[in-house]
Image (cartoon, rainbow, N blue to C red; front, side):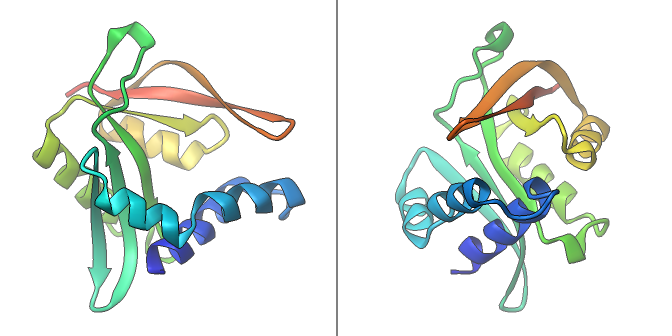
Length: 153
């Protein structure tokens, strides 16, 4: 349940910059369900690493081991999600999670990040990711530009 709640909170904070519209609510509530996380945890093609403080979830990183980046034949493993609760930004949690992911699966990581998420794009670039292309996230009648970033260290 904590993964679901944290995901919804971070997602809405990031994407609902003008308030929570019905289409955004449908997207987040249909994506981050408890069943989704049960399936992900049971799937051998995914790795989930969490950062907790006692019993409290502060953030997590989800890696998709079977998602190939087609841009420039990069390959590698996708950082599907890296979420840290806003109250804990700036404390190195994202760096710890990303570092653990790199140590666990190697340095061939790639991801997509919404072009409007300036904070995330700056974080990834500071960590050694470079922009290698464009991807589009489409739901309902909306189309959002994402940047494809690849780890280059």
